[in-house]
Length: 472
Ligand SMILES: [Zn+2]
Image: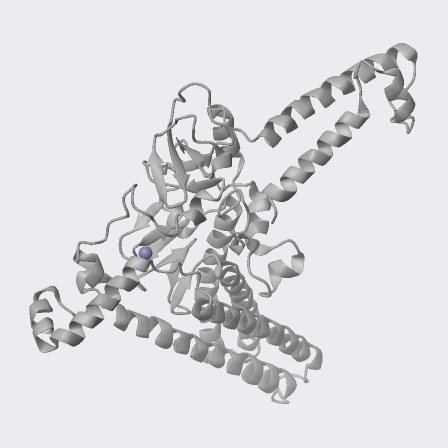
């Protein structure tokens, strides 16, 4: 691999220590210029020949500057804390730990001889590389017990390979949950990884993407604020003294440079949140074909036009579509289906996508308090909420959930009933008002047409099903 000589440790030191220090230095300098030089020296204590003190303007700048700086500090430290202590890593597999233990034992036993024997492969690399090159990095076969698979097949949908098993990471030696990406910089699998962020020296993932976006957004506003303040007083000072204040000019340039950069990042991050994608997924957004294993609540009578995979405790069997596999016996059968190129199965619609990252309330959108709702993987439908694309795939394959079918027929019946009611109200001259005389009406209407009780029970049933199936 061309990247084999890539020095991750040096990059990590540079990104995690030096860049934040430089950024803090810049913020310190801007604070000095805006607060001390502009607010205090120019607005509050100006040379008497130039102008009278302007307390109002100085106070307004001071307050706004402090609020923005506080918001940046809050979002930055929340981001830093999350990237450090809750980065969204997927645990490494049992095989990885076993191999590591074996290596350590061998190393201890063989001492120097071991190191000599290994030297052509280079022992200074990262542990994961050594394990990858050992040749054992294969996913468990379909017949041997595969730990960790239960987390996948207990859900109703998951991203899989062509054979119906989840995607395997050959470095972490574990299954990859939906939307997980293996990050080379840190040699770990990261859930819904967005990118490696040099600003904080870590990976922006599902846990930190919201805080990252808030941080770049507040930084963009802060930069634009400084740009406006510096530009306004620079022009004024020049008009009055016919000289240029270099320090204010530096702040103006820094504001323009970082403002443009962070505003661009804010724009792209918001766009990714709204279409429910990540920087990495976005690279292949227009061409990607997702392979999904979708749980079949009922086995088809005839041979389906797609591959299936059945999971039971410990083993999987591909393509077995025997009718002895029944959900009640602990066997869960999944259809292996493909999206059309460029379709996003996780796209829930712009507003729901946005809320799945930023939360339900306006204060969640602005302040770095709670994690994104999409970090909660308790839902039954999959690691992440599935959108209309998956519903369509289920419908086309004929593997809809009974609740969905019920809901559709229920909607159709309600529509028919409404039409009938409208027609009858036209003929009798009574407007279509729903009354509380349901009991009497139902007894009269023994044929079941317009049966209100039926509707209520069905609705309750639906709610109950949704309550257990899609608890969030
Ligand atoms: Zn990995």
